[in-house]
Image (cartoon, rainbow, N blue to C red):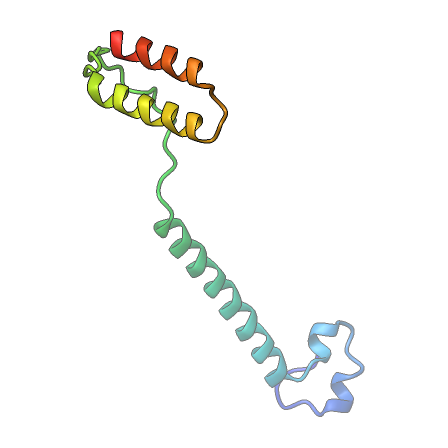
Length: 110
């Protein structure tokens, strides 16, 4: 086995590859491996701390159903809008005079 202070030609004839590597290089590689592992573990811990804990899907909260009556629509506004639409259709020639008069009478009677 080659140890510290052994010339490189003697280390080359050692049985294992680990002992054939110069001591300085071996320690550098070992240090790099350790640093890499430590960094990896540290990053894993940081990611776990930053991630929110997994939660089971909670059932949706049950609320009492409330029925709200729709506010009555302003009938005058609806009639006015319908009359405008009828007037536009009559002006475009889509409705005849008789059709326009009949629809207008229906709207004003309701």
